Image 1 (tube, rainbow, N blue to C red):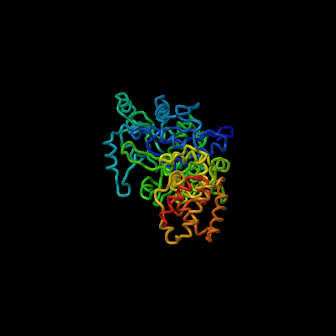
Image 2 (spheres, rainbow, N blue to C red):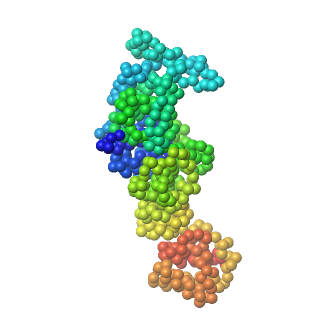
Image 3 (cartoon, one colour):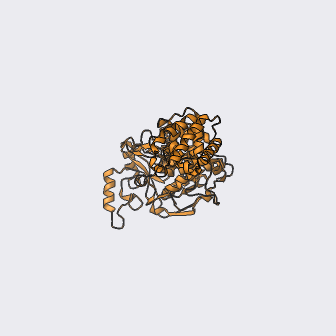
Length: 511
């Protein structure tokens, strides 16, 4: 890549289902690299396999990226100068057929007319104990029905008759393919071990192999980050760049390490088995109506989600673990990405969320939590009060739904009072204390936590009680159990009337 080319990176998902957290990490690294270098982040929909297309999947992808704060500079929703941004639309514009034809003319690809039955026969014929799954490669291509094994006249007859065909790349029998990966360094492959991949299907739609090379060229992509599962396809892609556009035009590649689960590559099945999300957001497959839970619905903040993803395979060389998106943009470097698999730890993921709940701006926290409180019937119309409540309990919450339990008593009286926690040490002196406390509170003109605490301690001393002897009963009266933030902060937020009413209603339960 020359120094004058503007950095352009892309994420090219297939609209076939939910967005795995590995996919979002690829988006994140693309996004950070583009922002770090003043470049463009492009989203291109790779819908070449129409048989796997799932309605709603494309819209879902855009929603996930919007939630995570990783919106692209160019996409089907935000077209730029390099459209169309869906491969199906690019196919309609004839962008792939011409390159497939060029490869055939130049001897780098060929027409293959084999039927499914003929392909199956080949697999049976060439299957051995050492080779249980024969490939369509240099070992068998001359035994098949294609423009290499047929004469030019025979090939033209089939084409004129409209016999269905695919275009396959003609992989060299003996050639070493080498390229430099930004993470792994120099990588080499024996081209003879790769099969003759289909480049253009019978319906004229390109496969990923042809489309990704053509689109990256036409969209002037300078760097391509993708998962390491695509490494085996690299020889095909390098050759296509060499044959069509020249290796000097090829983007710099970085093959990202896998995200590992308890048993190998992290999968949707792992999430179902071990009870953690693997998709960015809830995804319901319209074909099976199966729901796969997402990080958003589980109760993760987007700031925590992007932070934990960044650390799955990267660090800045320090002990720092908490990064905002702005800090990640400033610190991110592709050469700090590890080349080994990164193991996903759900407990660590929850730690990230807990830390971000504590540090995120209170207004952002309100935006995320208020809808949850409202869903449970809590009145959140007084946003100033809601902010105060969240500020008191945020340190106690790991996931956003935790706010329901930790803050619910601020919005409605507890349904149950844990009298058993109080009764064993209850006494008439404590009963008198709370009777006097009610009178004192009813007369109070200043309702602030500090004043309430001072009054509480004075009345306890006058009744020859230690404040600690009556603090637990007071807490249980207000919240229903042995939990919650500083009890006088709770009373301040509840207000005078509600605090007094809760003491009055709970007091008979302890006698």
